[in-house]
Amino acid sequence: MTDALAWELDECSGHLYIHFDVSDHFLNLDTFIRTAESARKVIEALDETFFNGGLEYELIVLPPAEGTFLSKLGVLVAGPAAVFAFLNTDVGGAYVEGLTGRSPSEWAKSFGEYHRTLIEGVSEETTEPDEEDTRLEVIEGSPEIPTMSESETCKEAAQIVVAMARGILEKGQDELEKVGMEVGALADAVDARADFYTACIEDRDVKRVGFTPDDDFPIPRNSFPERAQKPARKPKDEEPPEWSVSIESIYVTSPNWDKEDQKTRQWKGKDQIRRDCYFIIEDTEFWYKVKNKALHVEVLDNLKVQWAFQNTDGRPKNRRVLRVLEFNGDKLADPLPPEAVRAILGQYSEYEANIEQRSLFDQ
Image (cartoon, rainbow, N blue to C red; front, side):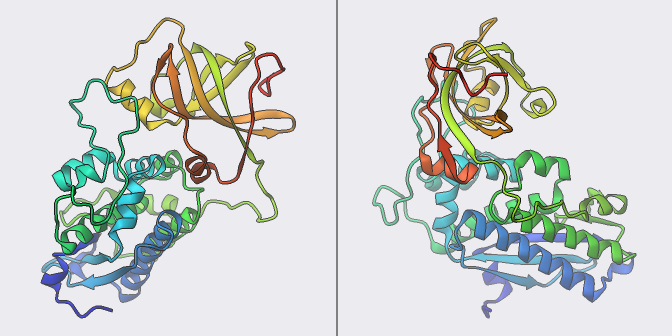
């Protein structure tokens, strides 16, 4: 554990606030220990899943603010390159935006010019995003990158990690399901979140919980039980069907332009041999173009997509469009490389769709 003073920590760490609404500003020691440990486990799961243990982080308890019980945990990240490299990927950008509510470009703008060379620098004013992937690789020591102090870089990386951890602790179960918490060790993060709220339930003095230093407590006590429920896990010997990935053209018959409503009403179309198919679109760049009205929309649209599905009982299920490659003949993007697909799906097999053969999407 570092012996740095609190004022020194402010220069290079991010702060995870856990604000308890309690009487007389006192908190049971057991509640403090259990909630802090749950927060540590959330960060540990993020590190294992997304950063391959490269954070080299420390969690430090900082003095609470006077006149309140505000648990303030300092998160020191000694390996910031892992964070920026993760943010610089399609998968990383999607998870960071889903958990923090801020896209990679928004994080880049908040950090300034330095990180515009590390994170995709697509401004909100851009009306026609470049068709090619504009993300840049992290190149340590590159002379084109302006110099920046190590403490500033570590602090900014820690702020991203803290925001992701806060998202897991703060968001409702339905919001986390939309983000997708089945990848890697994220299920352990959800379990740690459940332990956090179990500790709050058992401390009857805790009325509400917030995650800012302000007197803002968005999670009331009657919401603790729902968050304390651990989702059921499949037995380890019950392996889900393997994913298959292919590139196909889809004739859209019924779109759904509400990104958040797709699980309720999926897109409907016909595949290459005109068989009905239902699917959702997960491609964040596609939805960015939708938001900025950068697509030429027709009455009946044609998509060329890279999508995934699971073959269950001889029929494809859970069709997911990972990347929209063309929209009405206009090229939008190149297919995701195998390593990016594996990061999303785990192990998968390639399937080559052939218009002259029966499609796996036959009903």
